[in-house]
Length: 309
Ligand code: G3H
Ligand code: 13P
Ligand code: ZN
Image (cartoon, rainbow, N blue to C red):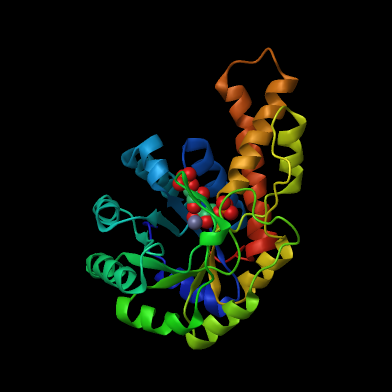
């Protein structure tokens, strides 16, 4: 099966009351772990690539790794640009074989966001590529840009219909209280499900995207901290809230921090317990195994997309 765009995947997810995991990829072990998990659970997948990932690994390497995963697994896989900041990066990814892009105009004013998003949609749709837009601003860190909690803003449901109609986007990322990174809440986690409900009431059968949706798995935070790391107070979105979102209009749930934590915790533990090892294949094997099991857990217990490929 060739790479696919997100249209059919989201239509089925919306109707089926589940969500697709959008996992950030940066190297071979991460691509393999996610796609092995997808294969074991027969789950559709979105592999997303940030500007930082393209800088770290190069577009062509990530593209070829993902193509290899498609050949190896025969799963429906979307290759998606995460947080495209401008038209040029979206165009470069579309020209370079991505099947979906996000244009993140959320830091611009409403009219500028619409104009930018519309321009990307026109270019993308002519090439059968789907587009995610964003309204509202999440707190946290993306590509080394730190959005403070004061600068974050919930999505205004009054804007969503006009935004979708005037831009032609295929899905919409909204801000309901999640944030990027491993420190999402200072106290009790709280998400504005009322905003999600109002947005989905106004946009019937339209796929919604949740960024900043790692649960910051406590087991791996503890592992990082137990083996020389220092992440006190790390906290994510509780899994029951993510399950609730996955059953609603949310069709795409973005997960990166949980991959990073699982990777780092497992690596720190392994190296501490095997100080004599220096072959990367020795220490990256348990890392890849842990990533695969973590992703399987998300697919089955959080997203509900097992058996949906
Ligand atoms: O939303 C941000 C993702 O976690 C990607 O992070 O831009 O550091 O690769 P990155
Ligand atoms: P997390 O930091 O919660 O994993 O969010 C990732 C994300 O939204 C990527 O776009
Ligand atoms: Zn994001």
